[in-house]
Image (cartoon, rainbow, N blue to C red; front, side, top):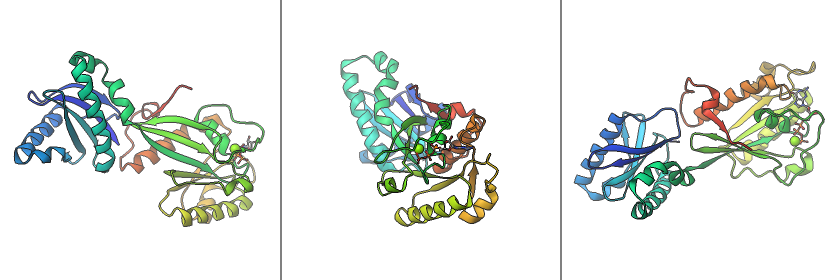
Length: 296
Ligand SMILES: Nc1nc2c(ncn2[C@@H]2O[C@H](COP(=O)(O)OP(=O)(O)OP(=O)(O)O)[C@@H](O)[C@H]2O)c(=O)[nH]1
Ligand SMILES: [Mg+2]
């Protein structure tokens, strides 16, 4: 993930402007250390300036020159694949170069977010799947803090019904609510999905079907993480989560999608999953600071 984008002066090694996407901000000494490393790399070979450098084991730095004596610097987590960043930083640098030629540094400094942001976003796609009526649309409503649907109005769509946007660092989280009815399942396509939320209503009958769905997903998309939500835990016939874990063979998340009191649980599950996905510990900040909901 991208932690920060910094515009720096190469001679003074000072930060001119920055946009932070993550709560761990890079410090001035770390930035200076990177910029002197960069100067050393350049001395050895001009082409080395395109290479990423890891500082303090935790931060990966990339940079591109832009403007007379400036560079745009991306600071990411150490696991971030170079390829994703290189295409983004090249585009940001190109945009900054052309902005610098027509506008003053003051303008760039003031508008850094607007200049940088369109090139930064990545998508993280979550698919809500499970049999019809298990509570997928309800879970989506809970996440968005909306009143859950009281009656079951089956989601009918070729593949998705509602798509909602939530931001996590520089990722736009998209939730696809799939239709669960048998005839719609043939349309399920998870080729651009990053994570599956598989919902069960916690009845034995549904668990058998859910296990079937899980085996199919594991077979078709062996690298796709599947998170199971044991929903409808408020109902008297609900099996308890530990029994469900045993049946499914993996840990499950306990849920009551129609109870708004569960929203915080759901947000912390998301925070744990996202941080885990990026190899990070969950930082000790409020969930609202981690997950930013776009206004509708
Ligand atoms: N008691 C209880 N009812 C729930 C819970 N979650 C969902 N429901 C109810 O179950 C019914 C179906 O919920 P939906 O969210 O529409 O189910 P779905 O999985 O989206 O169904 P399809 O769109 O047909 O695939 C609705 O009447 C909800 O109110 C829960 O945790 N507890
Ligand atoms: Mg639905």
